[in-house]
Length: 369
Ligand SMILES: NC(=O)c1ccc[n+]([C@@H]2O[C@H](COP(=O)([O-])OP(=O)(O)OC[C@H]3O[C@@H](n4cnc5c(N)ncnc54)[C@H](O)[C@@H]3O)[C@@H](O)[C@H]2O)c1
Image (cartoon, rainbow, N blue to C red; front, side):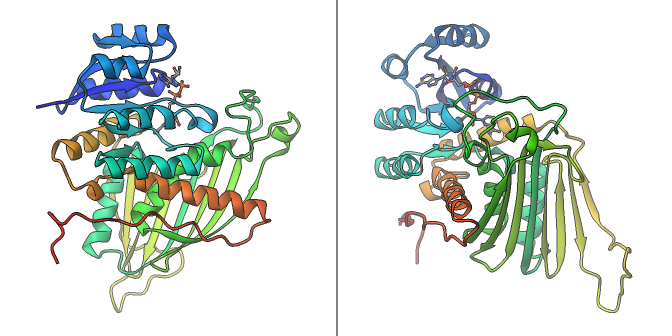
């Protein structure tokens, strides 16, 4: 039976989620909710469901299995805690947009509470629910990369001086708004490929055209990391301060002792180069014969239905809580890295070790010794 879903927060992203649920055979979209009545009403009309102006009202009136939280707030995350906790308290499984919160303690509380209630808490870490990331992960699982050595991530919005205008909203004109609102995405992809980050160092800056307008945002973030598996890595992210270079709006290269892959433009292309066979020498400028997956997809929007389907699948299949893909705990890990990045930046680039994640409890029904 399809899961009965209610979506909270009917801005642009709530609309994308509602459309994904309505198209998905595992979901039965039952209700939409927004504290701004016109937004709730417009969405209700579009999707042919009932509108609610408060989550409490929606939870009272509708039998739901899943509440999908698409609110936003300061640094795009301060309005997540309240509805997530309210839905969990009412015994609902929750999918929450990223970042889990703009406050690390709130995020910890959400993850802790969901675990104590034995409910699923997922986060929309949609950037690795793509054919490119899936195939890249397969290369790794098959051993085609060997021992991973380094990871390089570059992610930025297309922009530059000419197209810049100051975002005056206090929700976004904050020093750490790009880090808190956005770095969850690249960091979640980095963790998906290379595991937990144990050491991190950050520098951040902004261009003169932002400074001249009194823009508070630290829009260019340079993050140097070491993973628990000894891989080293680097993330460069900016918020529309330059024009895309190679690889489109986001690219990641992961190199290992047996091969290297590079994902370009998030969903569009994956290239894999095996190391040369023994006895084969490649000169400088010569390339190992690559395998290329060109999906023909440029629209990043496809990541939403893919990720939402995975959540619905996991809840439908009642997977062990700790096997939930892109869980709240996974999102908490990225937030830990973000807060470590802020700490490092504030101390002039000192090395910071992210706080450890809450321990896993395990499930004796599926984990036999
Ligand atoms: N995963 C992605 O790729 C991606 C991309 C963009 C944005 N996002 C995230 O999606 C979220 C929503 O973004 P948006 O641009 O649609 O935001 P938005 O501000 O346009 O919309 C949020 C809506 O939530 C409503 N709202 C706030 N608190 C509420 C509450 N307690 N109950 C009911 N309604 C409430 C607001 O009235 C508003 O209509 C943000 O957290 C953002 O970070 C994710």
